[in-house]
Length: 144
Image (cartoon, rainbow, N blue to C red):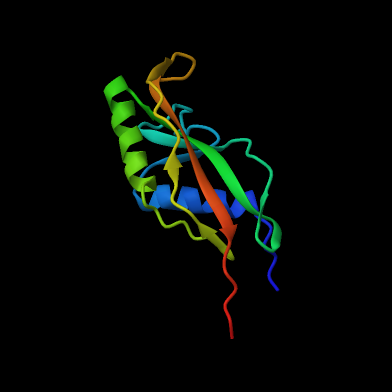
């Protein structure tokens, strides 16, 4: 019998893989930087968010989880950040995330945030943080 407990790491890998497969520049919990230490734009920064504890399915305890994550698009202009956020949404909308022994329900954009400016990085960039969620359940066991 397989371990049906949900793990966040394989889900994070699947999300980042889907973004990279869409030819997006991805940072993990921080913006990617070039050799000079400047933020590479455009880019999207992936960050897992605190999620609810695992839920139970019929006959299975603690096997389902609603995972939350944030994808923040960055660019040098406000329009560019919003455009990249839309490209991120296109990559996530209907993405088939593959996680061993899990069935992933459609990734959902929770809401659309506005664009803001970050004056603390070089160069100054605009960013659009967008929260997402997905429901992950244990995959049905194959009958022999």
